[in-house]
Length: 164
Image (cartoon, rainbow, N blue to C red):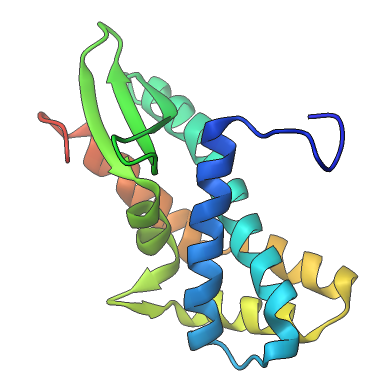
């Protein structure tokens, strides 16, 4: 991509779409006004893009070190929605997880934003751009998000059949 009007690859566009869906959910969950909509879209898209793009190499690194190497890729399902797929070293499909489910698992607990995640995102809504960026990074690096990543990887390492 070279400019603002450059066409995105389908996987990146699908992640942006997931980010937009997440932003709509955040608009209903966080203390935000109509004026905050552009910031919520920024947060939703940033979370979707950054969490998934960090998750893929993390899966590969952790599973390789554990002696059960998985290759993780971003793909599209039959509806054009983003999914994360893991493949074993011998090329067998291990698991398929829709990105919306992954985001839910990383950010929410029983359908409610994790309290730590909520605090970071709420701070990101009301601060200036620099403050919002710092709050977003803090959210991405927060213990609940990292722990949720670890739990998902553990599930996949013990998984025998693909999740659909």
